[in-house]
Length: 286
Image 1 (cartoon, rainbow, N blue to C red):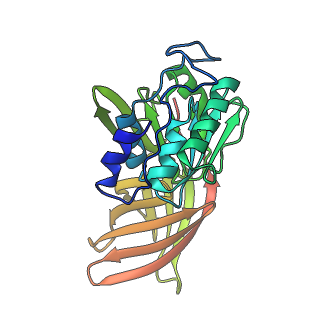
Image 2: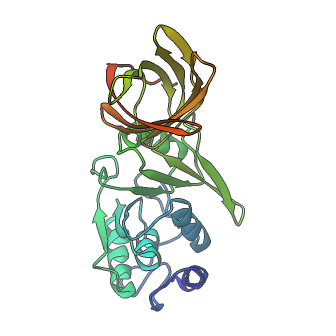
């Protein structure tokens, strides 16, 4: 099933020896392309796209990959065989889920692949560090609030369909088919304190947020400065500002729940700082 996939991946990383097993079915069950399911028809993601999706998510052996709508199991199996990840496939159709389990056994990855027969809208996949899917636009939109509540830094890859107003961090095309990548952002909208250890620097940050896009101000000693080049990538928050002495400083901060930790930088100086949330606001979402 994964001969072409493994050949491509083995050029750049160690791979297990290929084991042949049926692409779409076996002696027990033969699914039909475009057969109707609960919300979607069954149309497998091509092997080349499977490879690129997992690469785009920077999948490693430290990841837990959840595939929403796993079909015959090709993405979870590829995640385990070629990337060393633990993987879980959720498939509503009981016969497809059973086929996926048999395919995992034939691929020799049952120790790292779990196939669950169930509804993606009812099952918990919050432990995922990578989420893959090939659904429909309206299903992506329904899943979007749940995906945005996942741990900041979780990577999401969707074959074919985007997330509406939540613009992707990356888009790519494989054999004429498009896919999109997002990194779940921390929720930073609101007001935060920021100070160094001895109190020489103290400020208040006000942040507006729309998905991973942010802007705002930093107020220090009664003077308010705009945040320049502000960015949010997963749990990492960064910005630049011009202080009261016309010096350019930059900040890179790790967001952990209600706290910040990181450093202020300007030439010749690195000043550790910490902060905490003073006021929570809702992110702006259409």
